[in-house]
Length: 114
Length: 114
Length: 114
View 1 (cartoon, helix red, strand yellow):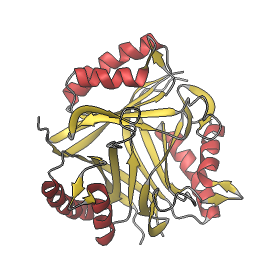
View 2: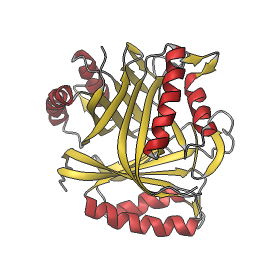
View 3: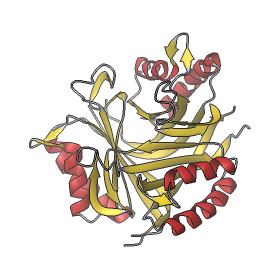
């Protein structure tokens, strides 16, 4: 697969403890992305944050035991594939009941090949 | 709170050891964001970097003891609220004397509700 | 150095184990950025992902021993300097044989000074 030119970067901010049917919601999203043949996905664990999921500030210092930290998923692909994935992710997020922030940005894909 | 449509992503690159009145500057910024009712903030710790704060490359390997690593704060909200927050953050950064890189990008907010 | 106004954010997704002549490819890229006088670079280690480098999902949980996790390098600078750097990075990536995703976005640089 080789993709170059204009594309979209999808970013999903989620809680590490958010669940979908006993599975981590962020892992369910990454597996769905892979199943749909998306170009790639990257998962970053933040050390602190507040947002859609909660008004409490989660921090790596205070919550090391529970580890309910913010997670950021990044997916880059063509706009068409991103939009298709978003409609799948929306269903999963609705089913999970989690508070989620999801943003989309335009990017130039300078290099992507396997 | 529910926000959808065009918004801005603010990103602040800062040093983990930067201080404002004996508090971490990055924590002071996150607390200010929350106090101002911003939609959310996420703090990511990098493992290496150089930039506004220093020409030295900080790495997790070399500086594990001091832990002066780069920190990235991400805040998504409406442009109006982002601009208001930036003017507050500017004052805090000026008072801290820290070297900081601050960028703003346009994003489509696809989903945000609590 | 002081840069303000429109700029570019370059993001490079790479594997932590990718090598260029026995050196980490991501470290070689950060050193090259510094040698070229770029404004800054930040390196973030992800906890999971799949993409250009592999169809296997790398996770911090499964691969703690090998630590072949996704790495994200972020560089912000003027468009001219970013384009010059990209052509250097392309040569390094070609020489390494690594699968890499590289994207570029427009950003407003609100603050950058040392």
